[in-house]
Length: 467
Ligand code: HEC
Ligand code: HEC
Image (tube, rainbow, N blue to C red; front, side):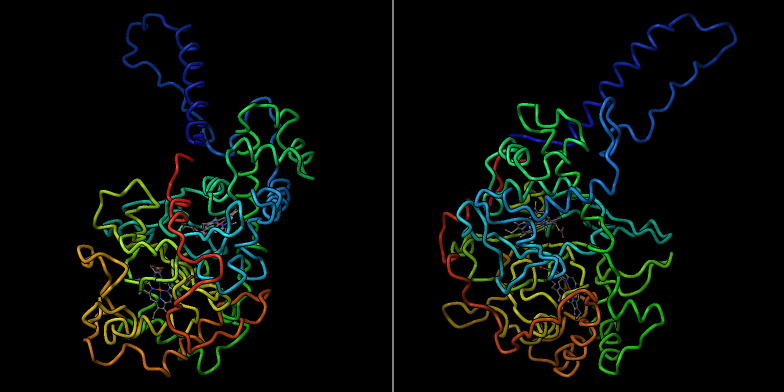
């Protein structure tokens, strides 16, 4: 089943082009003497082909109507094959729309036991996330600097928008595991809010045989819901209050912010932007850039039971369009650090379970690699053990990285505590107090029950012929 929103807009465009051609054909006559150039055809209105473009003869749902509908869909577990999983199971509003537990990866699928390949991200603060681009130019007046691959939804940027993205979990065998677009449409038709969907999109919404109209409607509603400010970008953290001049950082938090920004110390702000934008928007603590950090291999993940398997992010194998770009292997999108303190699993593979440990990894990756990476049969540390050696050149070596092996770490233990104290000021007001993270556990060795090595699980989330 192939569902493409782009082909839908393409159809609209082609239909318009045909109409235009017919209309123009009617006025073909020799140009009068002296008229050098024929008048240009009227420009196609900007909304034509846009996702939200009105469709002739259809009701045009308003944003509030779509957001309300999207909220119902987001929390509707009946839309999963297991009947037990909604979007909120992995993106819980009580956890800043991130995972509700300490599992490295959440379990899903028809049996509710299939481990996904990656950690669930928070869905907050994605409102300005643009579609993936290989050559990103900052909007800061200097167009000459190519910041490289940037943006797109998912850890590897493979979904262009939240509505294109919605198709993935609904149909992914490791997530909501519906067999087809049609199956989802069927469930929507039986949902308590089916009449609201008809009111918003037309009485015949569920009439088409392949279910594309209803599926597309649900995707749009989900996307609009995910743009609701109070839910998804409230900007109510202590740090926001500080930016508004309403509160002050305490001493440890202030030291942490300094270390976070200092180019020769944490240098975190180089990627996790901490300053207001030129036009005054509050920082999102990400530039959405794609970077290879050399995060340790997570040996507890089902997919990694096969030593030959590597999640290489931008170059595949989950993302499929850039597999012939070796320079992209190991790159993942920089996440926002807003609400990071409510997480209990960090990085794309959820390999760390405490924020201190995630920050310590930055401080000591190069000074004490033996602490982070596995050893080979002869007891030597295998550097960057989740990335085949031919891609090691892709790994970032700017500060805080690039320290000598055996030398001083970029941040001391006290400084790590300060950075963590600062990161906790990025938690939105509506979030429960952060769970008490254990600082003793370093790399998790096992996962939850049900996710033990099952090589067949690997196939469950590698790309299928789906959208
Ligand atoms: C079984 C857990 C699970 C369920 C259920 C689930 N997701 Fe996700 N979601 C994930 C994971 C894991 C990722 C990251 C996947 C990747 O990078 O390949 C993700 C990524 C996303 C992203 C991209 C975020 C970003 O930072 O780019 C969005 C948006 C999203 N999910 C929305 C949804 C919606 C809407 C639903 C319901 C239709 C849903 N998810 C259901 C686990 C889940
Ligand atoms: C060169 C860019 C870059 C710099 C500098 C950087 N980060 Fe990151 N950060 C990333 C990327 C990319 C990821 C995701 C990598 C992955 O999962 O493979 C990430 C992930 C994280 C995470 C995990 C978040 C989550 O949702 O799982 C934390 C915590 C974090 N960074 C904190 C920091 C801190 C603290 C510093 C400074 C000491 C820092 N980062 C410096 C790019 C950067």
